[in-house]
Amino acid sequence: DIARAKGMSQVARDAGLSRESLYKALSGERSPAFETILKVMGALGLKLHAEAVHVNSSTAQQAL
Image (cartoon, rainbow, N blue to C red):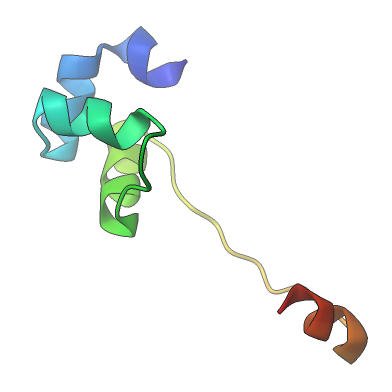
């Protein structure tokens, strides 16, 4: 686990969160805010990448 290897306290500081907030966000008991996810990813040196996919209309309807 990347966050544990780096040290949870350090990750929390780098993300601008309290250690308790970081543990709650990663606990799996609730869904963290997207902003929190981005902060934690940034603290871990990760970034989110989105890529457009080409789907046909029937596949798009199934996804809804």
